[in-house]
Length: 131
Image (cartoon, rainbow, N blue to C red; front, side, top):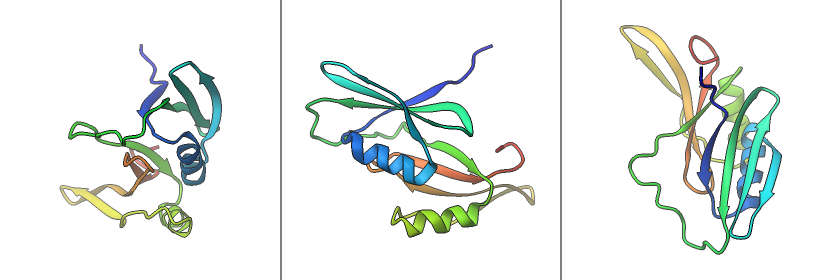
């Protein structure tokens, strides 16, 4: 059986991205691998073994075109309202909290935030299938 281990995104500014993911989600650098033309930075925290891999291509100055195929990363939190307030107080501009219902039952409660490169991250209230 396959096990998910990481998702990779390309970023322009390593320090800015590491700072964002640390402030927003408590992710720390688990490993940093520096190569001649690029750097890989693996971010994780104690809540999950899943990692976000930042790829920094050296010499790149233009923002990446995210296109219309990218969706989002998702994280779950114990207290959505507190996280929304905390992230807002950091100046990270969370979008409004949304409730998603199906056939009269709440499926999810969430908000979105964008990282410095424009990648969307969904922050979900922990519960149901979103543990």
